[in-house]
Length: 142
Image 1 (cartoon, rainbow, N blue to C red):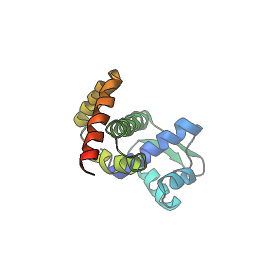
Image 2 (spheres, rainbow, N blue to C red; image 1 turned 180 degrees about the vertical axis):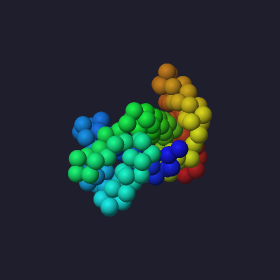
Image 3 (tube, one colour; image 1 turned 30 degrees about the vertical axis):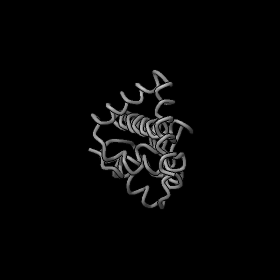
Image 4 (spheres, helix red, strand yellow; image 1 turned 90 degrees about the vertical axis):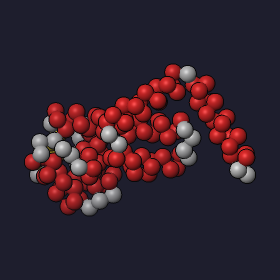
């Protein structure tokens, strides 16, 4: 089972490979705001756990296990971002909030959140109704 830290690395590697076709230690370090030596240690651990294959100076590739988890982690992250946008969280807070909660939810909760997001996306007028309620509340609190 991957730890939250391992999940962050797998997710970032998955995104880099999806966007660039490859993931280098330096790119991972930059995106996660950590030292390259920390990335190397974690990549070696992920290699041992069979989430990826790492060859020093040659790069890395995700195993099928790593790809599957990476895809689900990206889905989870994007789903939580959608939910926070729907419920009106300020855009500048969304990324940090998602990072703060994504590792603390069960996949059952993620599935229910998916249902809720789908409920709102199926009928955008529901989002407008929610915004109206929020605006009324904001006006009362002023």
